[in-house]
Image 1 (cartoon, rainbow, N blue to C red):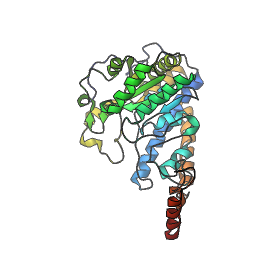
Image 2 (cartoon, rainbow, N blue to C red; image 1 turned 120 degrees about the horizontal axis):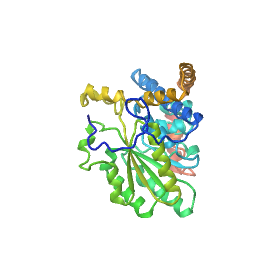
Image 3 (cartoon, one colour; image 1 turned 45 degrees about the horizontal axis):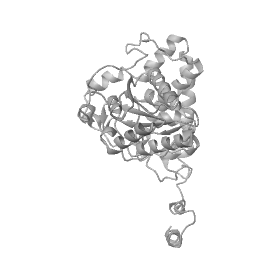
Image 4 (cartoon, rainbow, N blue to C red; image 1 turned 90 degrees about the horizontal axis):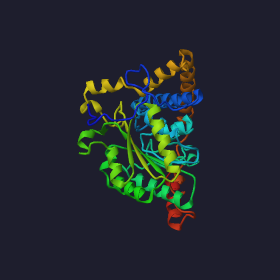
Length: 360
């Protein structure tokens, strides 16, 4: 197994799916079903996008199958006006916070209805309407920005919290240490979610650090680091809710290390079979976060086969409509390359625009 080290982590759903360890968050049925639907929608979008990339219908995709609980459970602890700075693998955060399938697929197509007009790489979402900051491709580059936003919130005495995400590989970047140090010193209202999926592309977590855990790195910067079962959406939510409430009260940052697993490739340019064993992948498939949560809902009497069929049909319809419409939308016009750079286009760009339009 690529995950090494101690097994002291918080858990609600036991891995054999026979019950819970206690400490279940007091969530109503509607909230539990909302989280489940978001996880399922994330998985279904993931499957569709992977298939479309292989068919040549989109150029690139970064899958997130296996990490839905870490993303949905954590972001469910936020308020609507809180801020998130995710990574390119955190599609579940966007879906949980209400972004439509159409908006997501317009971005993957890079068409003229894409909010970024095709200027960003696929999976590099950004949604001003939900305070979801555009994703940086450079690993950990967004973490100092997240800390800076949280520091500004504190200075303005705003009742808001920042939640930012990173992988195990990001802990080896200088921006990680800069962000954590400033957050600790200034007691910024921020929650760091470390999605430790065992691999930074092909480098195992065991070769990423000599620390006993990733969570303990937070202690060096003066704040708490917590480890949770990242495939247990209830454990992730409970820890995240406590961390968010602590930050909102002025207590400062928390780092939550979610022990999870990337079921698929790092991206559609990667072949995980070259560096991971079949035994490892099969062992983690048995800990599928969606299957575990489904079993829990069934025990509670909230899940039935009819319910499953109904929401799968709804999600499938949303995805297919988004694809059918988005695929027919024209690409951004040539002039969009020159707009939104300056508030008033300078003469040099106007000349280049005119030249480009002649050649079109």
